[in-house]
Image (cartoon, rainbow, N blue to C red; front, side):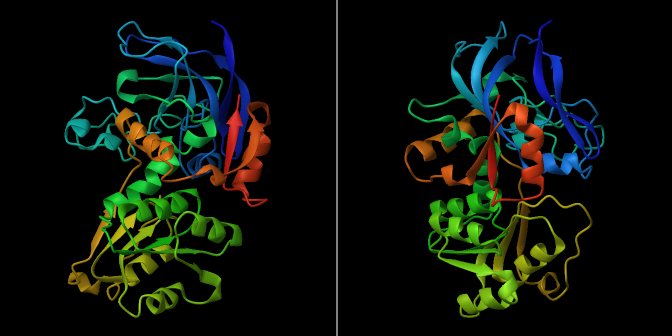
Length: 357
């Protein structure tokens, strides 16, 4: 069996480029030759040991590439076709999928399901920071890339764009809403764009990095708040004349941003949480109005599947959102350790890096 280059988790603090066998495919699978991928913040959590995965696993969950080989039962695709697959790869036939929650299509247990169950690439199966990646349930997950779109134009669709947009969708953003997004990393920036597309007429972005505040404005933020310039809750309440916001999107995953999101909601408002939390959260009595404020807290794991990817690429094709500015750095797969060092330490204004095998 020929080998390929792959980025492998070795141990806490160590991810290396090494060789692995090119995977065999089953009847419903497809082998994709990766042409572009990227590094996600979750990959950094894996590197730092904050999110456990098995040693020897290939990391990465944002694939763009060409179909190298199709399983015998896969219909409707051709070898050589340009495709993407979502970071979340639902089977299409599990209980979770049939309940309309394909993101939670995991192995499950007798007593429930594993959170993040639908996230398989680089979590429970080998991922796509490699020359090739195996895509299971190919007919549910491979989405052809429209002619005229480059790899970098669709690179955000598998995860960052899908996750960020879902913050606005799950939050129920309506025409005329005021929305705040706490933390303007790549997901938060996509949440800004998503809120604008959903009809919000006032979008507020909260961060402290000047480059991120500037990108937020290009993606649709009407106001930006530097949390180091003063209490962000006070600044947001001033911007809304004391009314508060209809939807607060929390895109970082800390107690501080979660609590601030609660405190800026209007009565009956919605906190849409996209953060991945590493410790228990505390809900302050006053911010939660003692449970009597008609407030809503919703969570979302990145929606996946081929129809979700088609819709997101249509948004890009139609010019409704230009996410190319999020790709700030480019590396070859051979330079992956340098890319991880830059991204993990957030140097040189990095937002997302494009990795090309």
